[in-house]
Image (cartoon, rainbow, N blue to C red):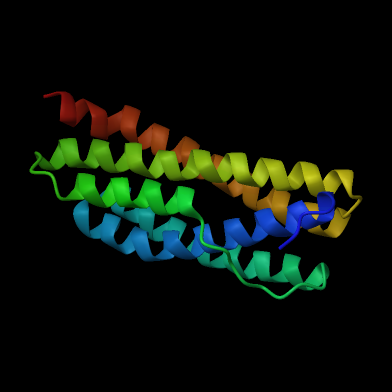
Length: 163
């Protein structure tokens, strides 16, 4: 795909995010299985449902833009997830593993926050208000997930891992 203008770049970035979200739907069940914290497991379960809705929202964005909903391999997310999978193979105390899982999940969220922030800026610049509205909703969800993970870490998981 040739990038001739900001609209082309927006489409390119959306394809990257679309693939990243699909990778996340495959990684979250593994993370749910690896955690010993019921609170963290529920957060992962809830985020899987939200991620599936975000994929549907991206499909709506592509439709609004007259584009086919398809992804381009997001190598960054692939690397973040590979790192998380490697961590899950470590021999670790259950509470320490939970802390490591939160760290991995927050890396995912921070990447998504950066990616969605960028495409929101492009959509705003291009005057795509309907697209912007959908993307801003997802950006808000990603920020809330990050905040929830911080709360879980600080209120219980990290305390248990410290012992």
